[in-house]
Amino acid sequence: MANKSGTAKTDEAEFVAASAHALPVAGFSIEVALEQVKMLYAAGQLKQAQSICKEILQLDQQNSIALQQLGVVSHRLGEWAQARDCFMRLSELDPLDASAYYNLGHTAVRSAEVDLAFAAFSKTVELDPTHARAFNNLGVILEQRGELEQAADYFREAQALDPEHRLSRLHLIALLKRLQRVAESAELIDATLSLNSLSPDERGSLLVERAVIAWLQGDVESCRRALRLSKHLLPHMQNAKAEATPMLQNLIDLLEFRYRHPEVYEGKHDREAYYIGDESCLAAADTLLSLDDTRYLMVPYWVAGAAARD
Image 1 (cartoon, rainbow, N blue to C red):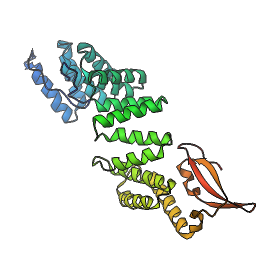
Image 2: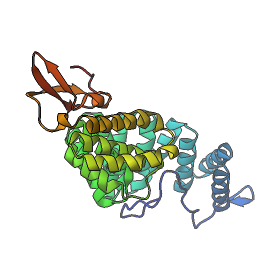
Image 3: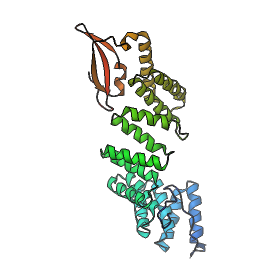
Image 4: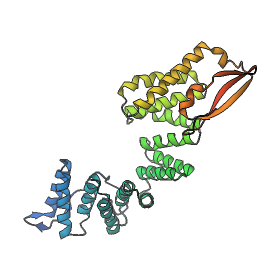
């Protein structure tokens, strides 16, 4: 729970400590019953934990600890309506409890109640202006709404509050790519690669992205360096491996083409022809074409998600 200043002390997957006072119930105290709920939750016996929480609330409808625990268990079980009701009641019992609003926001996201989620996360940061995760979640919702610049501001705020918060960095990198701010994206990737909390999938994907940007910027050495590192990580990647593998091969092919045809990169062309495409069009980058005795250098105007066309 949060203290009266609104500082969040728990996450949605954590239980609060049992209350100091105890009420006798069927030979046991509520305090003991709450501790039993914690043990059942830790053991993965969620239905049993949920049942005890409901029994406690039948005796004490305003027991905030039981409400918190019931909300967390229901969230884990995917019972979003019940979890939402628990966190809503918690916020009503203690309007200064930032963690209740944060958990309400998470549950609302799961149940596709986006407006409620935005309101809940907004209340979270109002009560706790240091809540980096809530700022990040607000950024995600704003990006989904198409409010990209404001979303970027929220992601930056999350990073300022918690420099180790990797998700806000990953979201901002993807957002900068959508905004075609390649140089900013490259700088943020370089800074993010220093985090120890990245998974192999995240680190490998960032290195591939960094190699792509380096190629588009004409920075061959940075491209090669990122490629070498990403190739070492590739065997350890899981979900992102299928997407990273063909991109790596495209870049390797481009580097080999550059080595075999240095004239393409020495300015020996008459005009430049620009084309729109996503990363799947990367293989066409810097290709030299001839048409009616005019030599064209193909230059990508990279727009993520756009369909490839000449």
